[in-house]
Length: 253
Image 1 (cartoon, rainbow, N blue to C red):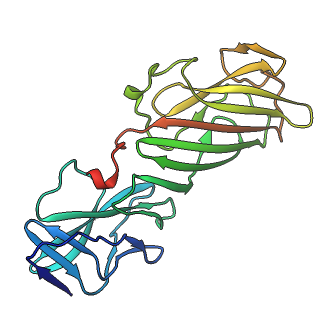
Image 2: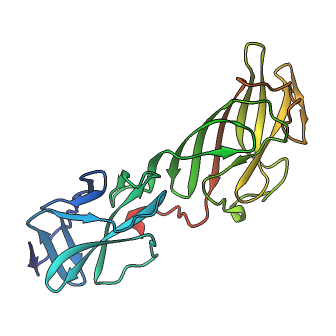
Image 3: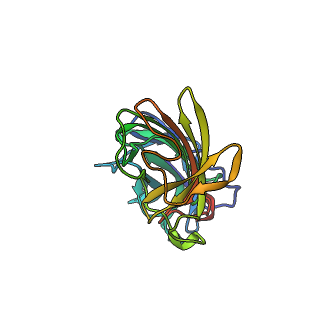
């Protein structure tokens, strides 16, 4: 149930909450203005996304549905909201189609996205954990080889890079992250991440900790910067802008 108030008051919008693995809640007591009318929730409102898309951010709006406040959600976050709708928050659907993070209207779109399926050109176990910080994707990835490689190494991004925001859109020297290359039990080597295209990264490997100014610009191969074998590892971190992600906070939209 909702009630309307036509006199002035300070807006108090309680945060959108995760209610269950598939449902969000806007709690009773939330107050907001639609057009010229103040609305106050006298009971909790719930919303469940129909046929959610994995790894997707949904914006949640409250609106006047024939005299009663209801919630709706959309994957599109417009730059301006009509008088009939109020943006009340957002939530992230992770790869298993459950809600992992809820963003309220007083903070930026900064959320831990969880473990997302990560792939690369080498036969290996890939564990990728990701964060969203406004328009940037932050990745922390562990790679453990399970076979001897035979190609140049590449890593696939689970989202599309916004190459218009990168000074060098694709090439061996556009450093967007770091890589620690571990010849397990023998030595550690450093490298840096570079973009091959809008969805793929390569690694340029520095020769060694003792020779910091030499590297293989052609990328990491089976024999560079050492002879890779099953059990060898990489630790990769990068930060890149993503197509369709805004650096505005929810409250600014």
